[in-house]
Length: 177
Image 1 (spheres, one colour):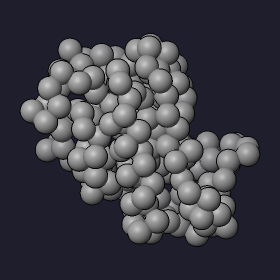
Image 2: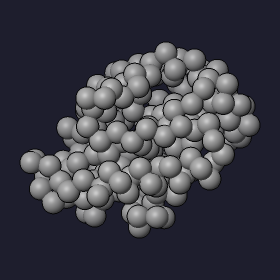
Image 3: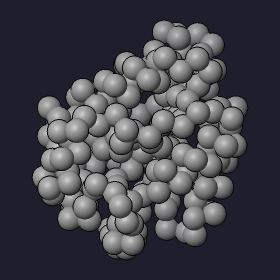
């Protein structure tokens, strides 16, 4: 990606998206290392009220997500040389909001897998505020990117993690030309 009419020449923001447990942090770290870009964890942009809500097992609403998404978009806009961001980006309207606020091209790496794989990963994860009980609400909210959405790199999370990471790196490299 070499820019867009609204942001000529700006390096893209790369958003690693998917439901909780899909491997956003692992893939984001690998992309940041490979492309020499900073990594921003989307979870760090949640206000305390959102974290408390999710920790108690209550799904977020769109009203809860808007300020969070706007903060992430602002961070993408302010990154001088491009950035890798982890953000669930579950619905198209959320991805559109990130695109609109980023002020630069946005490339989404969509990590997708079976409910069984996701549940196993969440069950093994320790110390995260997002409880496994919210997986079904995230899957119900998820609107997989459509073929008409710009800048989508689909990656299956079913293979071993090394294969997933390589697929993401290869997909981003191809998309960026």
